[in-house]
Length: 269
Image (cartoon, rainbow, N blue to C red; front, side, top):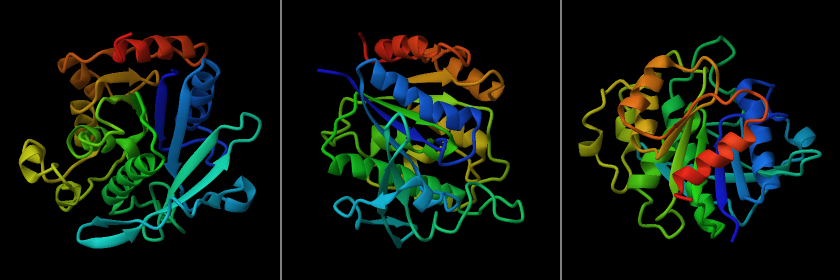
């Protein structure tokens, strides 16, 4: 049986401009598929994505669920498209409040959205609920970008009894991109879901910053990847202090072999 990898990406080109993160978001799943892995790929449906050009269409059978965040119902919309040439299929998490008509991190005035934390929570839960509906059981979940930073916590504490995730390992990649603003005092309250109670979040400050968000991801990951040459040194040191398996930056060329070896190490092969 081929091993299954779920890629949860913040950015994938050509749907967003090319960057270190968006290029890896496109190329890594393709490289792993070529190596015989079975993959699924998710990203947010940012409001800047041209649905007609990208040939996105809604998957009705997967849409329609409401996710409650901060005591408010937020409808989950799932769209799908295939990356040209590679034909890698990408699932998009969409919602009118969090993504439609809105940019990635900042508004038109260059101000970071005050609900970026809630957007990350909605994205994480939307991905995991959709994977459940797909009846798909990943061996590894690979999180790339701060938008996926909540996923490790939910996999280990909220969805750990779900058949889809009971034996799943989680890998987090560290990049150079980071948030500048804090996520607000409501973030910890909004995080609470199932067994993710305030008690297990008590060790984190009330005002989550990019640093605390990164530490939260690392705390519940099984391995960490240095995905760029200049990742946040404090987060890298934090990962080392946790004695986690770490893949040092393998470079921008020929990295697929290093990733493959690291995945096998994480799942014990």
